[in-house]
Length: 147
Length: 117
Image 1 (spheres, each protein chain N blue to C red):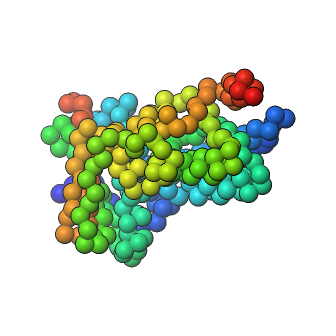
Image 2 (cartoon, one colour):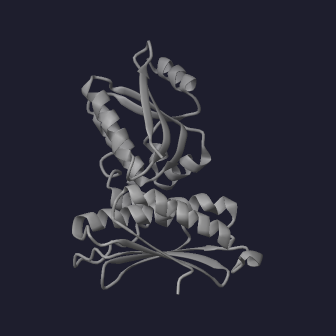
């Protein structure tokens, strides 16, 4: 079972709440202070993406997060249930080309670009229900599982 | 947290937009509306002061890129004031440092603008 599980209605207003909760759990789990901005931003991106997907395909379904604190690693799993029969886009291999003003404002690809640029330990995969984004950060050895 | 967006126009025709708070999927529409409103009013040279922005995600980046597209359609400009490393990092990751002029202060942006005239 996850250390913390979180489900929220697919509304933009709740994304900030999710960011705050995940950052608080990450801090408590022992993620270094200098990584918390990265956690906050990456989780915000993943949740924003899930909210937009749900609003398009299944607005009544909540977005679900699992936070795990095991084996010297803090892991966040963001699941959406917005399967539309299409496989998830692969992670972009590089930032948007030249950042051209024409292509840089696609929020979905930009969000995935930010996640892949920020987080070294990330997997994005299709699930039977939709898409799963799994992100991990190291925790200080003495902090894991404390409190 | 609410996003506060205020603007004023300097004597040399530069419209400075002060943004304060968190720019994310919930608040970004407010900034988008402000940029659209300014362009509709004929303000095509915009400087977004991000020194009081506490959080910026890709939705916010998208709004800034959208604003840039709009002003460029009128031969305008959209530049930024930002010295916060946590905000600059997201511009670097996405390659958008090459797209936006990013200044350390409003004064520096104004001086560079005068130099280009």
